[in-house]
Length: 216
Image (tube, rainbow, N blue to C red; front, side, top):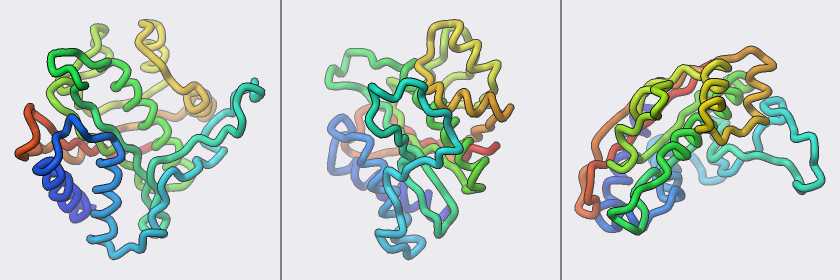
């Protein structure tokens, strides 16, 4: 995947030379990774599935389904031909340059996605990646509890960690996946493969591309 990651960084850097990061959404990250796959692995567009339904083995359905239509959580991207899946994040300043962002919520979103990826790789044996662009508003963030290292770090996700985070009231976990992880007595490792500075004309603060591989 190294060739894909290099091309992805090249494409996203080019985007940031024309469009301010402030004006982008997470879909820009997804689109450039999609394009990198088509260019480097000669994939057809239909061989890359976006918003793919997650296997029902990966989560415990909610008990009360009346308030939810069809429970069908999605994976951001799946490529069966390459046996891989990915989730994406874009953590950046908001429209108020001097304002703050909810860094803790973004960190918990990262862990939620990593747990989804870990469960998917447990059942499907796909390679699983969390692909993130983060600027200085997010970089270096650490919970007051110090249960996790400064963002970004390698993460070992276990039941004890989730319980400890919940006890600190710093969590908004998706317990459909947490319950399945605990039921199977699983833990996941998220190790950084890439942590690289992005330099471009329309970037106004330190911005990095971070890619984790999630394993079970």
